[in-house]
View 1 (cartoon, protein in one colour):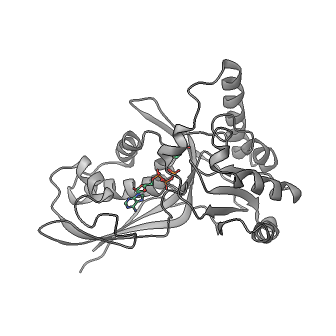
View 2 (cartoon, helix red, strand yellow; view 1 turned 180 degrees about the vertical axis):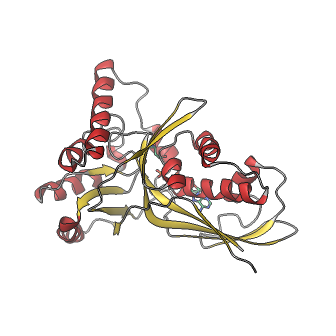
View 3 (cartoon, helix red, strand yellow; view 1 turned 90 degrees about the vertical axis):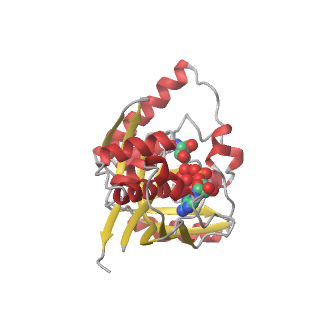
Length: 293
Ligand SMILES: Nc1ncnc2c1ncn2[C@@H]1O[C@H](COP(=O)(O)OP(=O)(O)OP(=O)(O)O)[C@@H](O)[C@H]1O
Ligand SMILES: N[C@@H](CCO)C(=O)O
């Protein structure tokens, strides 16, 4: 049996729209079992999700290598679907990794990252899902440039996951067609300074800049009304570092560990419709384990 494990991811980290992301300790696990006449996909999602070749992970694998022999696979996941925690990217990386193994392609991580970005359109979820940790990345249409993004060590990711789905496609339709030159300069300056502050371990500056996005959060505000509420709760505790995770609706606060409990307790008191999880950074990214039967 071969087991493929891929972490969840939180993209954007505020102003790093489509370019910054971090891997988190929630996982999609894909077990590859025996060869079968046709694809059999066991999974713990709703039965609306296909159990055969039409499953997203199989389709992704076949897009990389059309001649893979069908197998019995089992998919389990703690990553909620369409919540802004990179579920589609984790599934995509799992599918590409399966094709790489079953077709003996020997593709490097660099090649997998390129294929994943091509399919996803932007690298901010797929890069940390594959490589682990924080990643800054840019896709210019033919290459993916990427570098590690240093995330603070002594923090928790306080994650509010609303009890409704928001598809990335819907959250992207709310975005403006253009930004003014002035706004673009400010937006890129904020993101650049955030990256420098993180790399300098200056989380006081980073926390403030995380909340200064000009690219997407305002445009998505009506889709995620709890973002403003959670910021307000955190600000009352002098905590900054709250942002819309990916396309939402999950809202993330990166918080110093000694403030986690107080923030958690205030968020629970606010009775927002959803659940709060305390997550940690994943540093491994894609992992593959082979067991002899
Ligand atoms: N494990 C999976 N198996 C099959 N399909 C999946 C799986 N995970 C995600 N998907 C597909 O991806 C869709 C969600 O993708 P979407 O990009 O909207 O959200 P997300 O990846 O969870 O969030 P974000 O990209 O904002 O972090 C699901 O509705 C489903 O069609
Ligand atoms: N950067 C993407 C992440 C979700 O795919 C967005 O915010 O739309």
